[in-house]
Length: 142
Image (cartoon, rainbow, N blue to C red; front, side, top):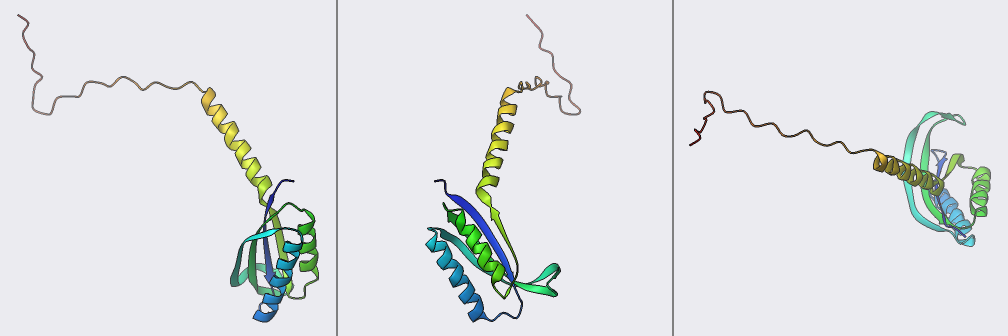
């Protein structure tokens, strides 16, 4: 089965204690390992202001995970756990490998289009003008 790449970002209530954050991330790590997934990167971005109110909150603690997995059920289970977790106010999962495939396809099309175009030839270089104050010298033919 094909390996898939995911970005998972979730926002926690701003007053969530560190112990509770650690407990939640540990639970998510267990789910990922049960589904033979791998965490490529995990970052706590800290408390940030939200662009709009989410569940009456203006701020939230942002957590970012970069994941690899061959099991699509892993994402469903992660989202289910995040949905019922008390401190989570918002989450988003993005499948990156589909985006990367699309990008590669677009680049290949662009390169193919460029290869089909006729190349323009540079105009011939004109003779360099003589410096100001000097007349071009003509050599007499003998």
